[in-house]
Length: 206
Image 1 (tube, rainbow, N blue to C red):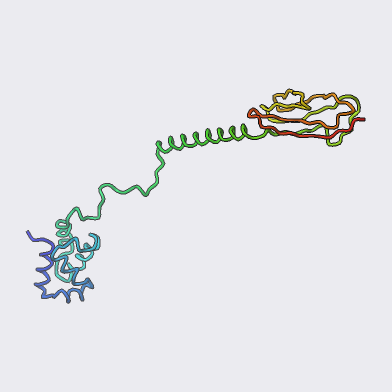
Image 2: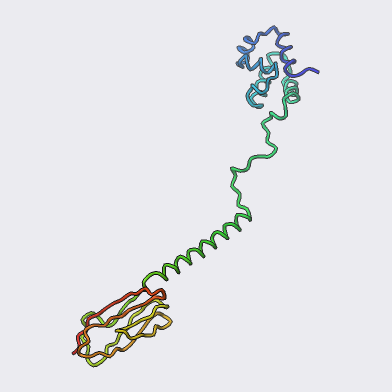
């Protein structure tokens, strides 16, 4: 049984074509023609290119193009065909249920971690303290002054060394007894970790 290489070579010899002359006729390099005749597939370009070569060679050599193609497909080594039985899909991104699960776990861990960091920063930081009354150098009539403001929900408030309750909204209000010797109101907010924020206001007793 003849092979594609033998069929092409016999036809070329029968037509009295040298490799050089066939190159001039088909514009296919003579070394490629010789490699096809010798069926040196490994030294040739990929199969689609070889297929084009064989089609171009068929007509000048007086061979039916369909016949030449059939011989080539029969003789060309299947392992060298440019066909991948397991297509490479690694470059195609596909969102899978496993990725959804992993993303959900990742987001949950990120939220938990962020919350823990937030709570830690709050724990080690001095609490917020806003003092609305008294104002700086406020004049006070009588024997008491109204002190009120806001702080963190879990902070303790001390006004001139007197503990004060903080309501569920973080606000505090207290009336502090004063005397003519009282020159200043000092409010301290103390966190659970012992961090402290202090605000002082001078007052004038009338």
